[in-house]
Length: 316
Image 1 (tube, rainbow, N blue to C red):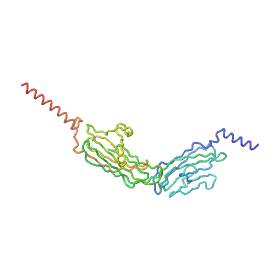
Image 2 (image 1 turned 90 degrees about the horizontal axis):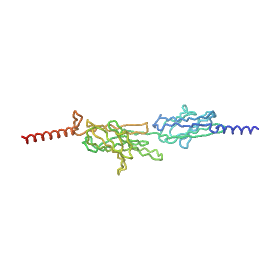
Image 3 (image 1 turned 120 degrees about the vertical axis):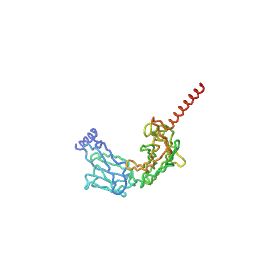
């Protein structure tokens, strides 16, 4: 009779959804953290046991378990070795684990496994990636073909960034506006190697009456700022991306260009600003026309005056 009652109880649990006593399991892992002594990562695991008791929490990096929490054991926490790092037991429990002294070889997928207690022992697991960043030692270095330009010139700029893990992305700016970006290639397998980054930018300066940053449409190149900026990429013989950008000179004839190295949202460092000036910029008139428009107007007026004078002389 007792056995029948137990079976009936388990059957009732199944009908009531007891098999799903573990619900809403989620994991919170920072996408990236800096490496170094004292640097840390806090990993969290949230779940709903719907009144069931907790049996265990287990944390893994890849396939290796590094932290376990079993409330029935004394002490409830158990730590397993991590290469070059350690678990801060004072800030680790049944909901979170804190890893200190991060290094890039700790990059990878992290899993949280939660198990409910008897009688169902329902278990679920979630994972999320974490990257430990070794940033470049120096700021990006910017070189440009000329510091003085004439209209219809094409300028070439190079930006190079020291080795880092992972390789940084490079963003180009003109007068503080983002105009283009080179995304660094990442290996599919984690080899933990530091890699440098490099980007080439080609700037075409047009002849026009009003200053604005022009865009060149490309089907495969998304616009960064609608109706202002876009990117057009070609690959040269050295397998580097060539970013092409079209603009017209500002009224002052001068603009500032820079490149910024970024790694996720935890590292950003800019090169020195490079100021580029126009050779003998054209003065603007009080009517807002530049010198070329003013010259054209003068030519028309002069031609009209000469024609009138010639006609008057013929009449006389």
